[in-house]
Image (cartoon, rainbow, N blue to C red; front, side, top):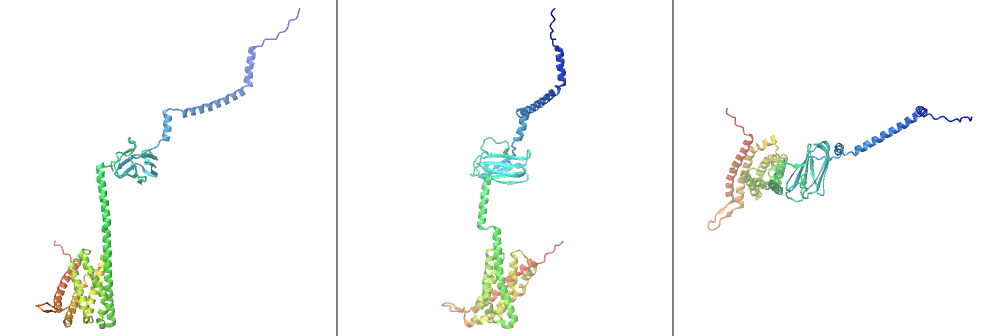
Length: 430
């Protein structure tokens, strides 16, 4: 008998699978967990990236709205009005800072930081005008708004503001300044008349300028007269204290030139009253001018015999004593100044000096009558058949009567002035 051949035992599939499971559970658990963890992280990152990309590319209304809010341009409310020559824009922004306002290619560009309908933000707008404008806008900032003025290149009325026919939503008429075309024409005509009147006033001189010139002219005139008569008065006073009575007889030769100058210049005073530069009446000024010049030029100036008489001293002294108070008073009056002491002297000192001066003039006329009779100066004979010789002394006698009549008129005028100034107010009867 042949021995049986050994055969290898069939593999136990159940045991092999169990062993494999045990080996996997013992030695292969950590590598498996590691590979699983890395793969999980990678899958999480890739899912997050994909979700972000999907969100960015998501065309849903919520995503589009957030992007639009970030890129939205804020426009303020703008109100406008026009005239034939100008455009007025009122931008409703308060507390404006750093405004950028310009006109390029007939388009107004506005951008500024301020507080508007959307809060404190940067607002901007652009307007293309219907017709050509000047590229130099003028603006004024206030606490509540921005006022912009634009000059038109051609004086005309526009049918609308912008070149596009459809009005922008942020633009509206400014009814506070709005005018129809006919009303704007009337306003333009009124402004033109005002401009012409202003040019006419400037060419003729404004009332303030004329008043200043008149005050300056009167001040200079009174100053010159005051200096002239003051020089005469001081000179005569000093000479009298030094020379005594001897100064009486050469007064004319010493002071005649200055007295000639002052008395001829006093003709300006009568002209001022005649043309309305001063409010003084003409008649008192005319009487004083004619009376003094008659004594100075006719009685003293033409007769050398009268120039050496003592009466010349008293005539000149009385004239200058009155004027050294009158002219300074007029100087201060040009500037509405009132010095009480000077005012009292101006309205009081004439009371004794005017009659004394008139008396001295009358004495000089009486003393000159025999001189004119002896010399026959200014005497004449009437033609044939009358042939009567008329002596100049006859006119001197008439002048004496007129002299005291003029004294009465001037004295009455000065008395009224003083009573208006210092007159007692009537007491009310209760």
